[in-house]
Length: 133
Image (cartoon, rainbow, N blue to C red; front, side, top):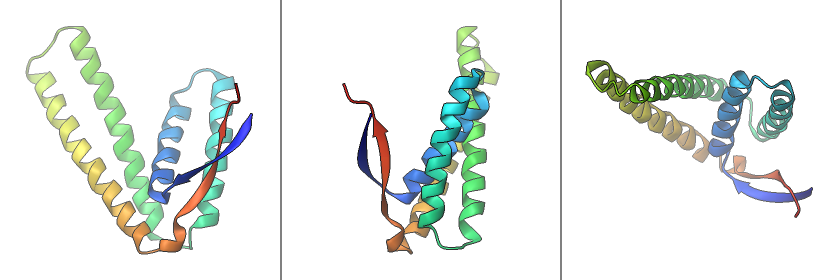
């Protein structure tokens, strides 16, 4: 493997950590779960080194985590309804909820980006791993 530096805003890094945490929770294969945890821990460490002490960001991250989790459940329910060709009132309600959660996701991502913009020194480069061919 070779090491590659990838420019990444801290708001994107936060979102990647949240998504990776969700993948860890869903993983049934222990080997995959371990790999994901190691990757997430490295990203988490990079985030902790870049951030000043703050009570604001953990609350935003918790909100982002909940929204991502809700979106995952809604997507699974929508796929289940679609697989059964059930496009009635339940599907419509799920679709509306999905749209509301997508809006909430965009709003929380904007809040995180705004918080990060107040701290320009928090923009950084995070090492990413890439396989050499």
